Picture 1 (spheres, rainbow, N blue to C red):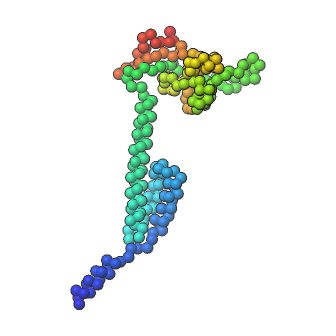
Picture 2: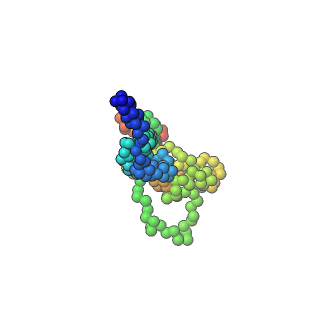
Picture 3: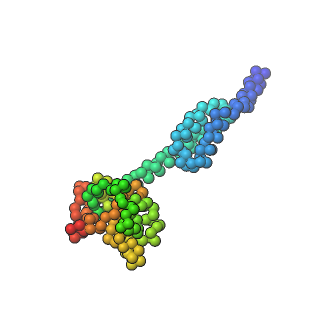
Length: 225
């Protein structure tokens, strides 16, 4: 009889049901679904995800939702690590793109003069003609698809005191030269998403980055002399 009683107790223990559903898991799961629907994979890097993870960790171990809670925590941690690695890789790629490796030809300019103040411009002067084409302050996005496609990217230019900046120039076509004659032989520098200044190509000199991070003018390519 004692053996039979022990077996009955063991069977009863094996059949013990899990604890009740967890309110913490229900709320955290709902918040996770809403955040992911809004930001997709970027949600794993959102500060709100940390609060969701903390709430999942408060789910009682004997709750029926405990296994699902552990799975969701693991999903959050794995995908957060994946997104952080991807962000780090993008940052390194951007930094690498801004650096000119030794031996790469580039162009350099002295420090640029300060931009003229807007109030100093006499926009209402009857003698001031309208200049066709991009000017200082023109959005750089317009150089890509606007102006009849007459402008193209050139070599990046290293401006002293500012660093490497993207440069644009007029396409070498008859139609573009006729459409934008004032931009022939000019270089457009962009900064912070807009045209910073327009300079004659003769003011740009070609240099070569050396192994000791110095620069050497390329023979015959000093356009400013």
